Length: 212
Image (cartoon, rainbow, N blue to C red; front, side):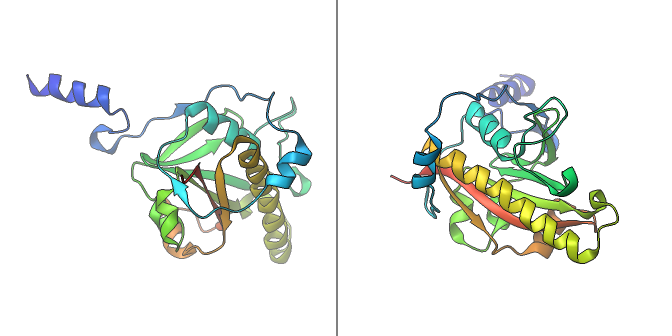
C-alpha cells in the first residue's frame, strides 16, 4: 500500500489522529432539551464523584452537556447560566483525549486550541486524566468593563459556580460522574493554554462515565 493510502486508512480508523498537529472545529448537534429526570430527583442525586470509567462521551451527550453548562437558551443570546450584568465573561474550555477546545456558545461548536491531550494537567489529582473531559472555566476580565478588581474576582467566581452547578445537575440527570475542582496549577495550565494576562482560570470540572 502506498504511503498516502496507508495514512488515509489510518485516519479513517482513528479520526482523532490529526496530521501535523491539526485540530479542526467541531460543529455540535443541536442540544436535546426534552427528557431527563425531574428536577427534585436530580437535586436528590447530585453528588461529586472522583472515579471515572473509560470511554469518550458520545457527541450528542457532549453537545447537551455544554449547552446545559453555558449554552444560549434565548433569542437575545442569553445563557442557561447567569452572569453579572450579562457580561458572559466565563469561557468554557474542553480538554478531551484528542485536544483542547473552546466552547463557542453562540455557534454551539468547539473551536480548536491545542492538538494535545492535556487532561492530566487540568488538576493535581491523579483521576483527572481518566475523565472523558475536563472542563476548564476561564474568566476573561477584559469583558467585565469598569468593574473593580475585587468585583471582577467576586462576580467571576459566582458565575463559575452557576455554570458548574448546571453541569452537576446535567450529570445527575444523565447518570454521569462529575466533580468540580479548585486544585489546579493555574499558572502552569494558563501557560499551556496560551491564555492572555486578562484571562484567569477559576475552577475545573471533570466529567465522565461512572466507574464500574
